[in-house]
Image 1 (tube, rainbow, N blue to C red):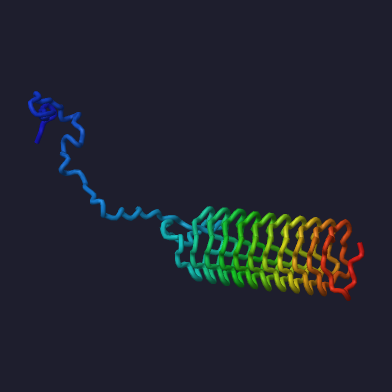
Image 2 (image 1 turned 90 degrees about the horizontal axis):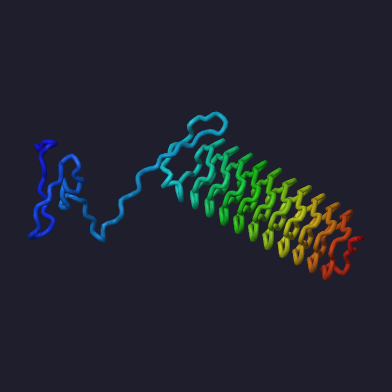
Length: 287
């Protein structure tokens, strides 16, 4: 055992005088030597990251719902999991399997759910502003009363989903599939629905003020009493759509297709109807 007053002689270079290094100030590499340092072969795989366990708690009661490694959430199998009221703020759930999961009233603010499987999931009352759900599968999901403000749902599949009283202000729904979905009376003020598929969708009383619906397919859509003030419906397909008493004031209907559409009582004051296509036997709207 070396005493604190003893010293170790280090050879600096061949032919040079020995250098004394006091033990109490000796660096670790001097004490242990390079032969004891860990060596990694270039072909060795990097060590797995240390587990980062996170607790998912109920946003109202604080009760622990789930403890999980944050590294495994992406593409995780969480099918049928009960996470009602969970705090999932800014969580990375890309590609996760959440089919039939209970996420009612959960906080998913700014979470990444791109490509996630949420078919049949319960998201009633979920708080999800600015979440990324691009290309997510939400077929038949329940999003009633959900807050989806500025959410990214581009190319998402919402076929048959329930979005009754949902808030979709400024949401991105470009090329989304919403055939047969229920959006009465959802709020879609300023939403981007360009080239979206809305065949047979229920939009009765929905607020689509200043929404962009250009080139959108609204075949047989029910827009009775909907608010489309200042909306962009250029080149939209509204064949057999129900626009009974819809508010189309200042809407852009340039080259929109309105074959067999019901425009009874629709308000088209100051609407742009340049090149709008009607059925030859159909009565055109009174401006």
